[in-house]
Every structure is written in C-alpha cells, then in structure tokens.
Image 1: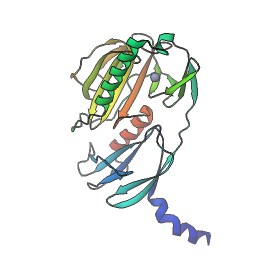
Image 2: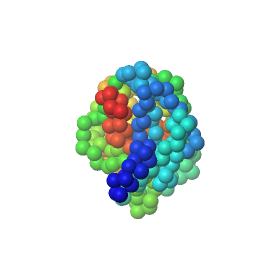
Image 3: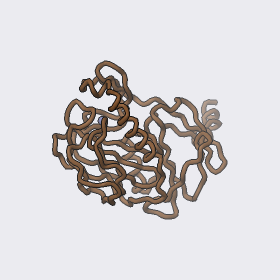
Image 4: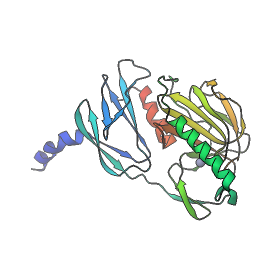
Length: 267
Ligand SMILES: [Zn+2]
C-alpha cells in the first residue's frame, strides 16, 4: 500500500522545487521555453557553453513569502516551495552619524539609493561573461549574507552580501567580465564599485579605500578594480561582496556555486 501511495505521489514530487529565501534557483532546459514565476515572466537565457541549451535564473527575495509559489513552464504548472534560510542575528557598533544621519546626509542617502535602485533594475540585453564566476579575494568570511543586523542595538536590515576579512589595501578583483556602472564614494557603502555582467546581473564591491576603475569601463575577470578599506558604515576594514539579480540582493556564495554549475554540463 505504501509503495502504491509513493507511486501515486511521484509525479507531483518530480515537478516541484524547493529554494530558500535569499537564494537563487537555476532551471535548465533542452529547448527555448517560457517560464513565469507567480505570474511574472522570467527571462530565458542561452547556456554559455552549449548554445542549444537554456536556463533561467530565479532569484528569491530575502523577504519573499514562505511556502508555495507557482511556476508556469511552457504552460505546465509546477510548485516551488520557498523555505526559510538559516540566517543569524548579529550586533554591530558603528559611528552614531551612520545610525542617525543628519538632514544633509539623508538627502545624499536618498539620492544614492534611488540611483542604485535604477541601475540594479536596468536589464542589459547582452551577456558580458563566458567563464565561471570567481570570488573577488581569497579570505576568511567574517559575516554571512542574510544576517539580521542590529546596528547599535537597533534592527536596521538584513546583511545584503558576504563580508571578507581584508586589511586596508588588499587587492580586489572583478568576479567576472562586465562593465563598471558605479565607481564612487557612497554614504553607507563607502568606496563602491558595481559591475554589470548583463541580463540583470550585477556584482558589488564596497568599503574600498581606493577605486581603480571608472564608470563605463569594460573590465575582465581577475582585473584589479580597487583596494579594500573601511569606508562607509563599517566597524572595521573588510570587503563587502554582493550580487544583485533582477534587483534582488541574493546570497553571493550560493549564487557563485549555482551559476558555475552551468559549466559542468549538469542538468
Ligand atoms: Zn557587508
């Protein structure tokens, strides 16, 4: 009876996926397909190695509703379960001015926020990269993506990237080929570089002490883009590395692992 029941449920199990909030899911296809997630069309992309294969990147917002969501793949309904990621809480002490910015600072923060939001929502219709992604430096992780952050005992936000230990002046390299879209100093993120990799994918490098690229510059993977530092809202020198996909800040390490499966011929 149990076997019969298992057989009965098998078709459903085959066609359902699970993913954690803040992570990305990759779906691979042998043909060009149409995919909708909760009614919103998701761009299908050509595999960087095999032109006859396709994939979609499905970034799940950190604040996405947990539980069942609907994927529509070539008209077929598939369930996608969003599960809660295991994220921790952390307390950080920073300068008072970074917690209660004055009016002038608030204006600047708002402008920078609006500018970044517009950039992350820009969808370049070209893939600039054709190699697996790398991390911008080899170092110990000091703060993981997704941590709920208490700045001076007040809950401010979740950690939108991964922090690496980096003493001031550590060389930081591009995670992959792309075009620089941000290269300036910002209130919270300090010396900032953001690279557009195409099709709504961006990598971010924050708190730099020196920026070695300029806006609109084409960069290659492993190219030196800046030196690490402790600028912006920080409690010590480190590199903050972030990934933005279709505007959402997702887990950069999980993203890197996932996107690189495209190069192993895995299904
Ligand atoms: Zn960080």
